[in-house]
Image 1: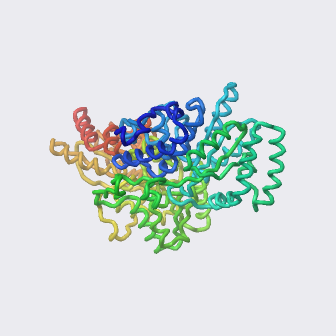
Image 2: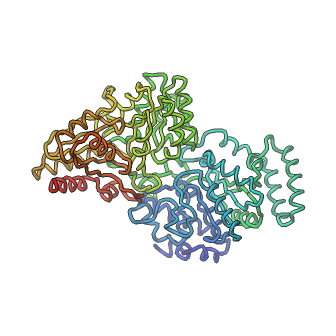
Image 3: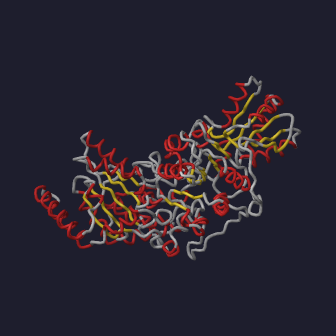
Length: 628
């Protein structure tokens, strides 16, 4: 790192170093941090636009507060790259999201400055409230700040935290609402419109903030000021402030990309007790023209030229699974008027934008509210609509009760499409879809399908349309196998039926989902060693194909199962249980994810780490053959 290029950045190794800078130099430091983030992310892709918009906020927070003793809880870690750089991880940031490198999100085990791990939205207020209450119980004096984006405010957990915090008489917590009018895509719903409306009375907000500053240390006058302020508010605003109705003192909105103004405001608010909310406005992608122009595209842009902004095109020729989903959903909607799409704030991420452009009235973006998305889908299904509810596998964990109680128990025909199933790569432990096969496998009434390629995904969506029951389809992140799917007609697949992909006599391999490809390659390599391995693709994790399993149980003594998911409670264990129940003398070796959380890395690296890439499967075949 050039000291001439980064004059201030190279001098700051901790928040204590930052505090020694005069405030006049903070804008220059912010510019250097922002440039460093751009240059690192150009070579090592990450979540770019969100962190660019929050640089000044991270700098101001560490400048004003006594971190790590004071706690800063970032709602979602991909807006906290500047926070990582300030807190002693500047030089390691070049390895952000790499195997063995920094996590792309906040992680308590990584740094004492990461007060709370964060990868799923809307958690910050609840966690910060818990910290504030713990400090109160222990008689400690510390400040606690929750930073939450406006997209995350649509999550029910955020409102639960606000409601609880506002009820506390002595709760000393500051919530910073980082409002950039964006989640990954543009936000939807009444809250987004409210946030615009709540700040239209600039005179009122400026007047109140100044008065709180002056009278913050005089309780009697402060109480009187608050009563007068409420009366003034009625004259200046059409609606009462939502946050103040929850007993939060509302301040804002202010320019969140003006670091000097942020420092002044945070310094004032630090000494005001009780629950407070500061509403700041930031620009997603701030300081990098391509990201400012198209913040959705530059949320996680992949590799790019930092100077020109030209993105490096992928060399993959196969279509992404998400695009197969998006186009197929549109095709199904064209042939069946009952079909609708639901997404919790991920229309571009799951490619539902394809249908939104053609049939916007039949697509529903419900905001970051996965539980609501599922129950809303259930409500649609009661009236004869066929909802395709697309939620990333890791986020579906948040809607588990809704699936059990509102969908499965009532046996409603909701199609739940789980994008990013299995190990997703660089996003790491918070985003792997490792648990879906296990956590859905124990729920009655649910069909669980896992396509091995693009065409199967398309046909499973078609099959789900007429299944008449809760139907889960889980598929991985990224590109498919290169199988033709666009020009193929729809095929109705028999539910709970697998296929034999290759016959054999020595060992049987049972795969589910896209592990079929690695298994096929391993089987071909094993054949070169004289091993004759049969290959069965289950297609469905539930119900299992019992006819197929009876055939395998009768013919083979050695079986290997392969799944891109957690082994405990997974498909391999279900297969083993079937053989045991039916008294087959079969030894089953299960390949998948052990009982642990897997950190970040490329998918190929992580498959190898977990032992179910091509080499891992081949090794299992060889060992099984020796033991057999």
